[in-house]
Figure: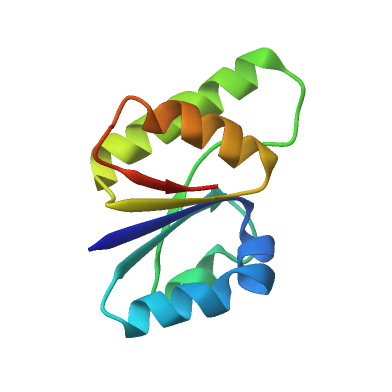
Length: 109
């Protein structure tokens, strides 16, 4: 079973969701973490998770926001997760909207 965490920042994932992801990995889940590229991406990989970069930048630019949503759609299509955990406002908004197009994906906001 594949679990995907969609989080705006890689450092936030490590500080606030890593324990949950560690438990999922220990339970046999394939854990994928999608964040904007940052300095902690390699640490996510070293922890045993797959890291996927997405353009979820903190901006009010509608073009950049659209690119972020398109990244999330491409991510869901490529990874085909069974369950997605959206963390923070932009991932909840874009992720829940994108998940509507993939009805077999379970969603936690």
